[in-house]
Image (tube, rainbow, N blue to C red; front, side):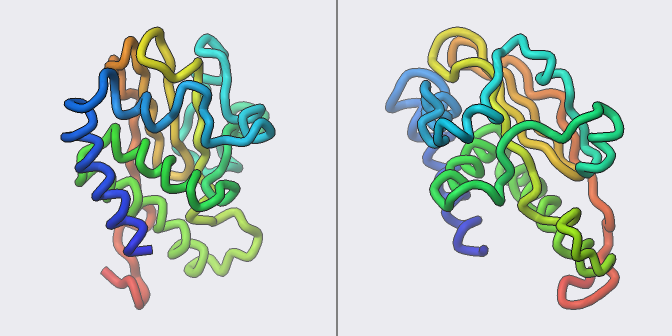
Length: 189
């Protein structure tokens, strides 16, 4: 897992500094690809929505059960655990392209806390899962027009809207943690 974070951080440096100088448009456009080519057609069906879809307004930092109670259905989008390694790396790199290095580390850490909570709660239902975070795209990623993407799950909600290759909104955004202090080893503290 440490190598994965190192790779994503290296990609972040390249994306934030080199790519904007080498190619027109946003690194997010490059990562998402105009045809969202890193997703299979089956995955696109539950992951890519029209930019004006009411689904875009349904965001929350609650775990899956709370989201379902609030909106009456499960979250849309592909979960990280449903992605192959290449897709997962691209999704993490897209996350990193919208966050500072510290922000990306915080988001990734919050996501990993689900495993700690799973152990503390002795959960064997799959409810607590560090890869149960959903990735969704709205509209058609490209250097012109408006499109958006979202990553969310328990205590993480990231929403970005891009117009003509520039981020015009990075909200709503939410970072939380529970527990904020881990009571047991090996991650105590």
